[in-house]
Length: 344
Image (cartoon, rainbow, N blue to C red; front, side, top):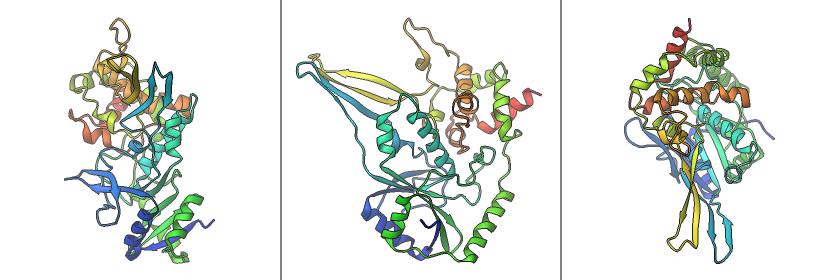
């Protein structure tokens, strides 16, 4: 299998058209000022290659915001699993979102395995796209080590001016290259330009907080009783935006909708948020995290502490979505720096 190929930019439109003939393609599309979303495209005209992370991450294609799991009927003795999916190509996935998908893969393939997620994952092809510079001031991809590609894709595009250098990572990716028939073999100069870009990125991307990557878990390990959480308590409005847009938040609620005759019904699940007061409420009305400070702390611990113990990696990808969408102006980088200062 070849490792790298080149696509001239003049052929990019033909590539997307040919790809869309193979199966459904979704890509980043502009949706108002500084807002972008993954939507179906049939040509390259609407695709935005230089974009701020989309409103919702690609996880919406792996775990829909709402889905039916089971349909049942008492009289018919019916109990049938429901699984809706489609073959899909996601084009233009940033490295932060590739990392988010990797995190979800670890969660949903762990026991007990989530069959719905796994079936969808195996039917989605991913084409990554490299950020040559920061998307905006909210990103923290360097300290999370997600500013360079690290797998999780079938093809990966890097913009090198008049052409794209494309890394082939899987046999499926190679089949796209062969079936579209638009790619060329790279020369020595192409690799030199790729390395020059990566060297420039090492200069541009710096740790965005006052803590090194390896120091994040110890920081949160000793910050459980910090007064910083009380400050977040006063500011947070418990809207749940931060968790809804996070590429690694995967909590959901399950409900049964039963017909009035009590004969038939369906079991469904939808996204839920640890920032909602009812999320940690149990029988009798007791809540384990009634205060917003506790819920905010829990969210941060779920990104920088707990997953290290279970999966040996952080579940923050540095995308900056939580900071962009917070109605209270709570910014992740500011919180980390405040905790670091508070702990000195």
